[in-house]
Image (cartoon, rainbow, N blue to C red; front, side):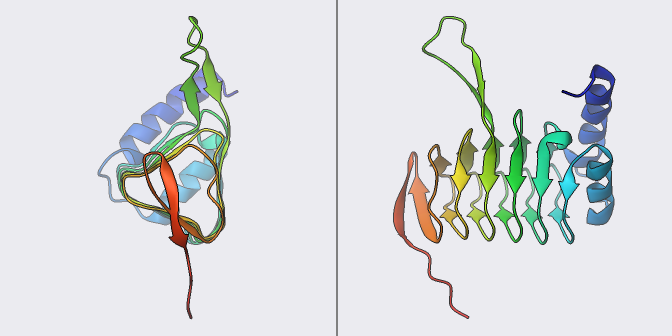
Amino acid sequence: MAGSVKRLLWYLVNAAIFNSNALLPYSIKCRILRIFGAKIGKNVVIKPRVNIKYPWKLVIGDYTWIGEGVWIDNLDFVRIESSVCLSQGAMLLSGNHDFSKSTFDLIVQPIEIKEGAWIGAKSIVTQGVTVGSHAILAVNSVASNDLNEYAIYRGNPCVKIKDRVITE
């Protein structure tokens, strides 16, 4: 766990640079994330108004696109592999509360988004989910269970609607 000074400094940097309309080169944003402990690949695009909870719990592979308004609420580790697209307003939520207990305990689990996956605009991936290679979560859908590779999912909760076929 990062110290309170590091968390405070990240909160300020996140607000001023990432979760804002500031138009900085992607390379600078990636460098800042690396300074805070994130593992970031090459040619990663991070658009404006992206909110990242803890960069020291974040891995992003090469050629990945993080769209405007994405929220990576990574109370646990979030691993985003290469050539992934997180469309506008997508949310990765690695924590939730146990509503069955009077203490409302926090539950955190990692999220993994495999190579070539696409998380549609305004979609949500919840704690403990693995999105398979080249899977698609359609616009405004919610994934609370693992998504198979090369499959397209839609709805809340999402269901598989068909296979994804990629042609050259």
